[in-house]
Image (tube, rainbow, N blue to C red; front, side, top):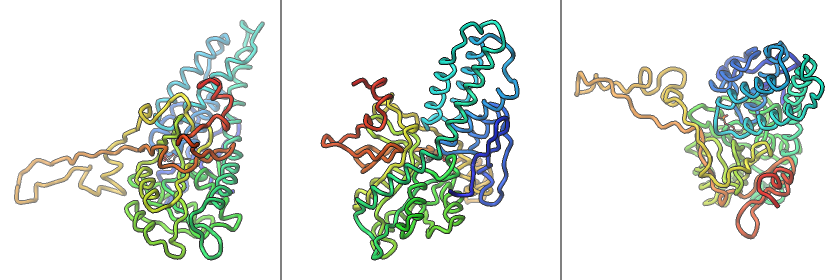
Amino acid sequence: MSGLQAIRYTRGKLEVLDQLKLPHEHHYDQVSTSEEAFDSIKSMRVRGAPAIAIVAALGHAVELHHGSCKTCPPAETISYIDSRLDYLKQSRPTAVDLTNAITHLKATIRAVDVSGKENDASGQDAIIEAYIAAAEEIFRKDTETNLLIGKHGSKWLLENAPTKSADGKVSVLTHCNTGSLATSGHGTALGIIRSLHSAGHLHHAFCTETRPYNQGSRLTAFELVYEKIPSTLITDSMAGALFNLKKAEKNIAAVIVGADRVVRNGDTANKIGTYSLAVLAKYHGVKFIVAAPTTSIDLNTETDAGIKIEERKPEELTQISGAVVGKDGKVDVSRTERVATAHQEIDVWNPAFDVTPAELIDAVVTERGVVVKGSNGSFDFKDVMPERWAKIVGE
Ligand SMILES: CSC[C@H]1O[C@H](OP(=O)(O)O)[C@H](O)[C@@H]1O
């Protein structure tokens, strides 16, 4: 597994790699409170659906470990933890892993038997220990999940690739960053690429720069080069020309992307630009694969209509390392023939995600297996999530 770690944790201490500084600087922030975890997520110093959930869960675990909750009865302890988790939930709205982790953590602390402990600290201690252990399990289990996604996804692609290179290998394209910098390790979509590479089945990996945050050029390229995976960086706008080439190592078999939220019918919210790649893939006969741990699947939301798409500040688009459009994102027309015109601010639309309809998706790869559309043309996640399906959807 890659030596790159977005998150470093031992009980009572959480360090989060500042991804806004990558690839130029490798700096870890200490995160010891819910506020510091919230700020790290909101600012995108840490990002990636699974990593967001892990940092939120562990950030609160660290503050609980250091006694942030005053001594109080179990019911008040649960209310305190709930309030901290509800605050953390507001950090970024689209990725469902954070919501699913919070739901799990709230259920875990409510399952603690505190009978006979209502009036002494042992009840609170039991609840806090249960919370910390559950948060640590979320972190531990994520890497195991990603390795399974890599195994299932690479197997499915090798069995269903529309094209292979002369040496029987596949070339793929990925978008955004879904590797060790977006998870606890190995990654989801990039995890499938790692699994293909380590098994000798990857011919070439292409990654898009993924404007405006540049997760591809700053983060995925960094991971691919770090592990000497044969790879090429392209701009987002080059994908269609690449699919159209169909020559040598540029003969793309599949687009493999991650997910922030896969809803019940398979519609998938992912990094902005994913939908465009899905349309291009369909036109060019390229498979389109979504790599999604079951923690990224939202059975409570039936279709894309229920997905909230986060919009982020204009400066993330108008400025890269310093102003691109003009000082502070303003388009200065005062030096044109229309002198003395007040600075005009170009409007900016900066949705962080878009939605790819299920009809454009060939497979959703989870840690429990690959889900493809049935004869009715829709996805059915019942077999990979039987417990949650029965609870939410029913038999
Ligand atoms: C396994 S990461 C999933 C998902 O999260 C990323 O979004 P962001 O970088 O804004 O947190 C991207 O959409 C990835 O595909």
